View 1 (cartoon, rainbow, N blue to C red):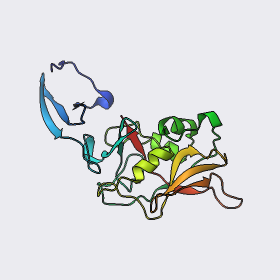
View 2 (tube, helix red, strand yellow):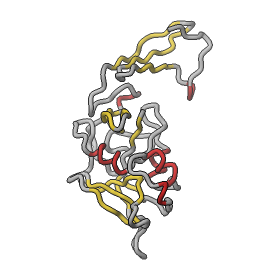
View 3 (cartoon, rainbow, N blue to C red):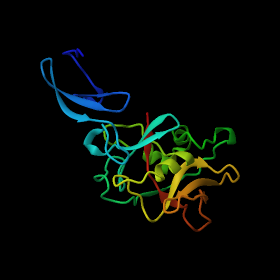
View 4 (tube, rainbow, N blue to C red):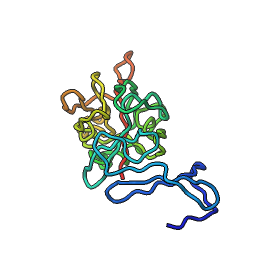
Length: 213
């Protein structure tokens, strides 16, 4: 590979990540002039372990519906701060929001689409869309079936909470005032109200973001 001397990367990074079809990868860093050096090499991805992201916070989930899926470690406290893999459970929660998705646009498998539809200030979808972890900014709130896939991946690097309800980005089809959620302890999906009954606050459930390629 020939790389130009005059180079520029997003966010002024001076590193280049190259990934093979099997997700083996290598990271090279600019060393001056037209010289580059290998700073990290990753072999085939293993479920529950970091794979080719920065700072070992890019956790491989496996393949689902033709895509490779990744998540963050548990215990992220903000869109830009996550602890080492396996060291903490999820504790951050957020409201789903009051957005009403028209029935034809409801998806159980495409969280990217749903996240863009329901993103509002302070809600779970916005948290995921604002996430900048491991050098990636295309995180989103998983749709119901993606969340189910996520919660079924059991590995030391993927740690969930015992609280235990997590939001999906999927609105309930039979009750548009609700959204789909999943219990991390037993894997059962359910329907949770988006809004609380006055004077109760809007329900706030746990959030775990994912990305796919």
